[in-house]
Amino acid sequence: MSSDRPLPQGLRPETLAVRTALPPSQHGENSEGLFLTTAFLQPDAETSARKFTNSEDFTYGRTSTPTVRSFEARLAAMEGTEACVATATGMSAILLMIMGLLKAGDHVVCSRSVFGSTINLFAKEFGKFGVETTFVSQTDLGEWRAAVKPQTKLFFAETPTNPLLEVCDLRALADMAHEAGALLAVDNTFCSPALQRPAEFGADLVMHSGTKYLDGQGRVMSGALCGPSRLIKDVFGPVIRTAGMTLAPFNAWVVLKGMETLALRMKAQSENALAVARWLEQRPEVAKVHYPSLASHPQHELAMRQQGGQGGAVLSFEVKSGSSPEAARQAAFHVIDSTRLLSIATNLGDTKSIITHPGTTSHGRLTEAQRQAAGIGQGLIRLAVGLEHVDDITDDLLRGLSTLKPA
Ligand SMILES: *Cc1c(COP(=O)(O)O)cnc(C)c1O
Image: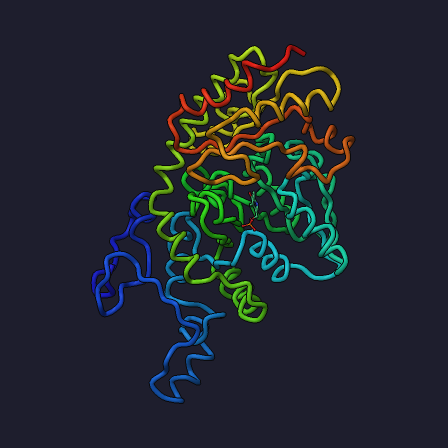
């Protein structure tokens, strides 16, 4: 896109993901440039003074850089929101959101199944500044309604959740938040805009860890908040310029390129994940498989409606074992340790499939009773399915499953 040849209106999501960016520089580069600079030259002092009063102009790297601006334009176009502000990580996007929207005495209603650091940020870090958070069921709308108070300013949801892939009804939560005079913010990291666009269901803010599927190749950290200009530019703009959780241009450039292939990757990885989920459901060593595209998923129909008919790349399953947590952990560890291909790591959003034991990693700090209440047993294994051939993934899982000692 050059400034004298603006993009046509009404382009489809796949096109926006490839084409939306700032115009090229005077050199006419076809691939968006990487601008590594902390300061911007001004022609004279008067122009400099004017630019410092207008946040749209480039002045200093903490405020913005062209590469970050292209990232923001592209992600906003993909989410179907007016604007986007990029941040250094996913967690710093939530930090920016809380700093911009909330003050002491305000109240938040949040699913208790959201990302662990999100729970800590609301409950612990902002609890000490007098922001109160009530954690409620992912799926029981009655609990959300009962938690609302006169001071409720924000609903925060994530769907589907990690590691049990529970889905919440975004339209119902948006309506409930708005009736209460609150905003709905949705962590859309797992689905990405290729599958799910929360703003279409009434969400006011869409948050991302771009570290995951937007980059999609496990290279750099990044994050973002998408929403209306009156929030992104007027509320969050001044906060990020002051507080500085700015995305680095190099990381913005890597993710900008990642977004061009997002829809293709999400489709291929969802297909791989569904094939692995169906294979696991047939295995006698497996007690249960959690994956939204399976008819056995408790919110299957809602998930398919919200997620464009796709399940995403993450699934989890429970290995059959004796009744004790110890036996279950041994069985899960055996399956994990028997792999030779899958990456043993605690991450997701990569082209390389990753196998994780949530009970001793992401959810390792919970007590056994808290884990049981959350439905995360020691026999649970999470798989973030990548782009390897599906038969190589199932062969790798079979190494451990077929050699499990009978429970
Ligand atoms: C990883 C993740 C985050 C945090 O993102 P970072 O980029 O690691 O800060 C938040 N929410 C979800 C769902 C995630 O998977």
